[in-house]
Image (cartoon, rainbow over all chains, first blue to last red; front, side, top):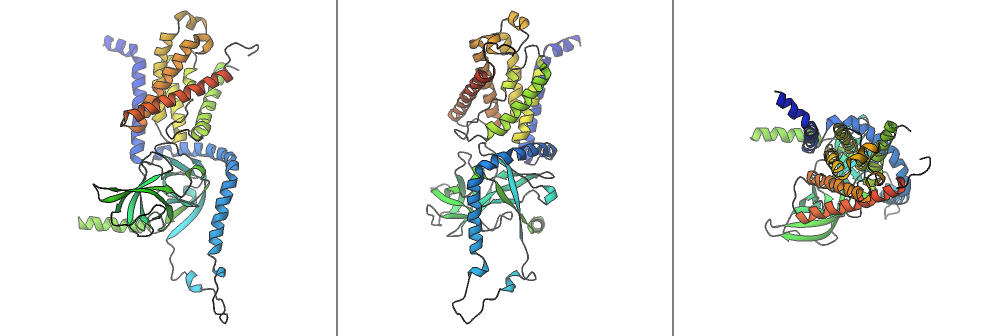
Length: 284
Length: 175
């Protein structure tokens, strides 16, 4: 017995060291597994507040490029206004087409909320974006995050006033995308080499690809609205073992200067998930 | 200022600079991120007990982890640095200096060669463990060694600059 105590005293530093290492590795592994660490949300609330103060300062330096992006977007939207369109026949009057906004016929599927980006990384293997909207503003996990020029990521964790999104630059991020010209679907992921390129696999061999083709979100994702810009093809190569293309694309959003984003909620997602779950249970 | 307050302020400063400035700097290469926050552990006074050093290291790493959303990653690397610190000091510092000088590791108390070895080995240990845990596998040994060595080099250069700026070798009057 005495020997055990002597041993413990002699190696107390080593044992304490091992204990701390085990705690660290346990935290690391369990967090990576679940992707949503609820127990850390209060801590994120505090660091999020510090980050938002700091990004308030940093934002001044990026104002120019962000203004340009916003005005570009306003330009696109202004061009879509109904008053921009007219009829060839001058005998007819322009009448606003009320059917298009009739709430009896159209049901809203996607709800957009704007949000400020208060923290953002690009340099790691797994990158996250912190947004200044949280549970109190109706944000939930699994919502899509879309920037002014393309998709950005998916919300993984929410606290009261902040939310954390898994960026497309994350080793576990996968999005179903489609090639604009042919409509063939593929799976978007990131191999972690450089933030300037994202990868797509499983685009069938039959599709005709060209460098510069647009890649859009497909209608199979559920989280993202279909037809949003993802990026343009930079290079593609046939994978002989899988008889499909491996494609490198350049993301259309610039992950280095994100400042504003939209959090997009699919209001039908729960219904879809439940129905799919029910039918798989029945069939098995 | 009294010693504990100085240590606490330094703690906050190191974490904030690391989390808000260094990790947001445009990287030279995607994998080479400057880390200097572990210098805090290396600057802790000689008189601090080894278990306390370990605990402080853990706390430092974990605070940074909460900023970077990687709970446990930096904490593990810090704890290892804190553990190695004791061995390195007992190897590199003659016993009498340690007891006479009631200070902390620095060029003045250790001499430039010993201090450089101390910093370089600690940085190397930090980056080896950080990279192993971050990737959870070592595929491509060349890539791994490249990342570890270049990150260490980058950090050591930054640490040298910090030493020159904030801890002059000769003692100033009234400092």
